[in-house]
Image (cartoon, rainbow, N blue to C red; front, side, top):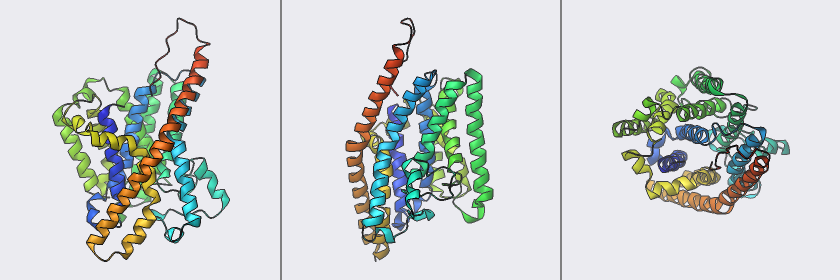
Length: 370
């Protein structure tokens, strides 16, 4: 990933943390549209994955190596935080008495462990997400990775692009329909905020829109998005969509995010330089662990904020929540995410190496860097 997109990922993670804080720290009401940053994650993932792997997955062994990397990227940190969540739920005082936000349910039987441990808890198997709430998105993303790899394996040229486009626009249409009709968001609010039921549609839309941008990143239209004016305009529109909250403007989120990602694809320009700053690079490296870790502390944040009497007390509680989230994310990143990601990457390289030994010496194999 180029530096500006890595920094943008870090900014998206921070926005999600602030969004979850605003339910308890009312001074952060401006973050009401922060849940849409998940869709920015999806667009970024589609762009980065397609740029790294499109054209490289031509054999079953390469698809398996690709999935090893994706599994190593998501699962270790996911399973550790999920197990910590279960432990807190059953053994920590107060934690089990405080329901998570947004209607997510707790574990009621051992059978509930299965979807959480297999990362299927975000798929439309059930209308509720059981386990750590934010893992609905990582669940969907993992299986979309699998689908992307399979499409690369079986389809070529125009057929592959047509499949990507159908999934992008089909997912977006389903998400908009669910938001407007099923969830009636015009009257109830929280447009484009589907999780257990139509979260898959949000993931399909964002991911495959990102894929299409990567496929056509050298087209003159996409290249023209890299102008300083377009970058600033795209960033402004992103801010408008997020700050306008859960209104109907949220339906434009994946399109606006796509324009911003396209404008940063060359890694040049004023906005690209902004997200290349060290603070955003640090946030980007920590983003996945922060996304998971902060969710562990939300019940405690809600409990503490409910007992706060003044805005100053709530602000201190918010600061404590941020410090705890970042500290936990740092530990998770250093001791779980990074080492296991490297380990799975090595296993993936070894698997591809065994396959390469069967390839004629005059064949060219792309470098492994995804």
